[in-house]
Length: 217
Image (cartoon, rainbow, N blue to C red):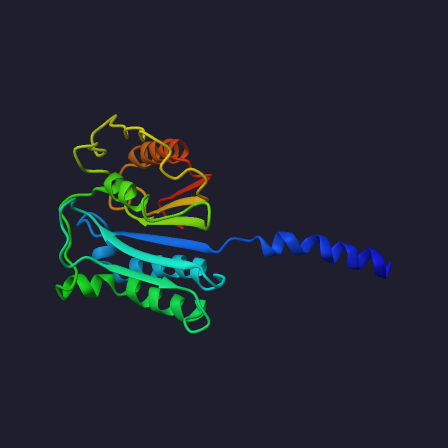
């Protein structure tokens, strides 16, 4: 029996050793239509959700925080990057990221971040595809947005509007895409349903293994 247990323990070692670190990418939509920019309770709820993905991250995992909205706005944007290490452990990084996200409404109100007039989600995803490596990390992309693309790519608020398919699998082999707040601020369950269907198709074509489109959670 002892020999059997020892052999079983050894057989499990390669799987543990080969586990990839996580890269948690958090995209914060600062569009004026997103309650994240002015609702403290909503921002705290988002912060709690993100914290769960950061607090148990392994060494060498990465956390990336970026804001987006209008395509050409670069000033007063949020850009934070962290690497989990013995000197910067996951629990400490989770506290920092939680405080930043929960504080978004106050940062906007104080003028330290600028609320945006458009919602360029697809352009943000195209840019971030250059930033992640799905072969070396387990990539979890969390977008805090109503999902209503409002750009020259698509005007999703219009009845029957659809998202263009990605020209290539930008995130081939990446693990998860989450959209928090899908359809938030709108009064149409039909719009939320269409947004979820469109983003599900886009995520699949882009190469994500799983998609979560949450209006509430």
